[in-house]
Length: 185
Image 1 (cartoon, rainbow, N blue to C red):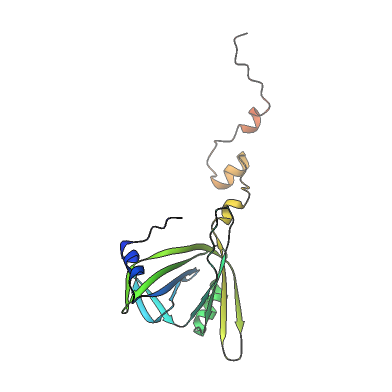
Image 2 (cartoon, rainbow, N blue to C red):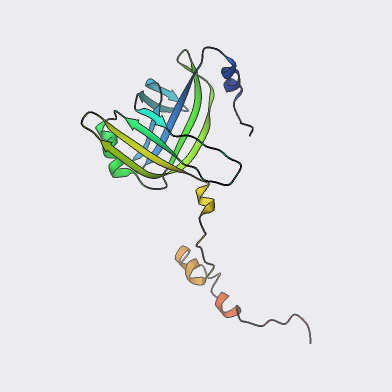
């Protein structure tokens, strides 16, 4: 599959002094958390990304030719107690999460990082040990939305639930058994 990599990324891949980096952005009720795989805080895409070893693992990003929804897990460790409280209080299913793959050379991001995964929060899991605390956040690929059945009904009641003043489906039940003759006889 052809990738839409920037010219800077393509030339950076061929360079010898680059290191791969990952960016993770997850949305919670109170806002976003942003981490990257390096140390210190950097600014990319107009946003601050925190790096101090918190982002310790990202599950496999899988692709295939079939219409299969594969998710991944993001593991955070050594996290600030405030982040643990955020995950406990503000994690909601279906909130977006993104992973970018980028390159860094001499402390500078090369080109534009590539969006490798976009999904929705499924389940957070907190493992609190005596020494460390690890947060594992599972994300579901947005393709899973295509595989869910659509439960929308085209009835007057369903339309009024969405738009109370709309009368577009008001006579649907009246005409469903109506015999309509299209000839002049």
